[in-house]
Length: 369
View 1 (spheres, rainbow, N blue to C red):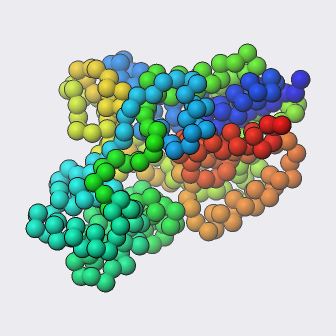
View 2: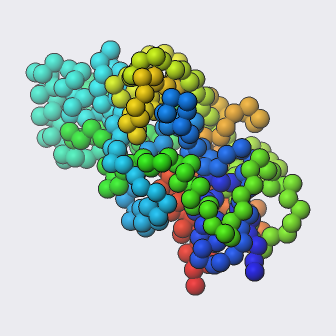
View 3: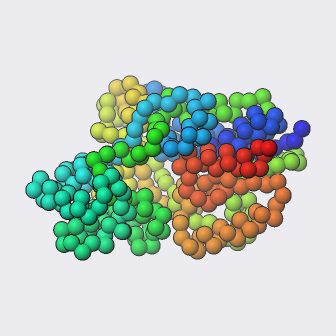
């Protein structure tokens, strides 16, 4: 029987481990440096009975039937549909900026005028990336574009990425659209929700197979055994001992605070584009409707990743970084039976469903005869 090593116990690693163990009936060792499974999706019930997302809010959403069918094997989800509130000019309103936001922040007469012009120019229910939206000839729409750029995008992006928007890749700016709709949900995917028992329990079930052994607080380099295959979901530059240099990431620091009240804010996530040093505040009890007289929040501060100091969160999408990653990717091709996947292995920002899909497709392409 072939022996397989999976490095990393997050969604990518757990998915490929489960498929190898269940579909091929082969032994799998899963190792992780952390003292817990589930990677950055790790959650836990605190002393107040509130499910805390240790590494920031994680909302599962997907249009991929294959992913939904796979993940539903391991736990049930609620029908939570994510909305994000932002404080704009002291007003609580929804983002992405849509027609509801328009009427929240402007007087009715101005909002009606702008809505009419928007519908003459754009099709209803479409999303226009903010930098594309700025290319307006009409003076009123130019005013609106500049308002949205400054109040929603400019300062938030500078805090989140540590650079001005002009230095941010189009893949990032495309995630911040103006939405010509009254749909205030942050995602429009067919399937959305939070696992009822949490992400850690979900991944624990994925890894609960007689062919799978999990070893935490373990560096794969400490393992002496030979493996027929290695599936590596850690940082690809770290695997190759940074021979071409470090791949840059943004990291996040969370400041947790507990309050002796039922709720701190009106929504699970409130963004602060123009105020304070933090980007947003998470309040976790909204996700599973946890009942407690206390509440826990986390203020999120963005920062650059520093080796040994903090966690890698977001690959920084720039041409020079893509070129550096491609050097490592070419090195990876020289290895037989070693597969790189996941956000760190592929140096690519993945939503949870896309990380799962990547693992499923890797399995299907290579082992599903």
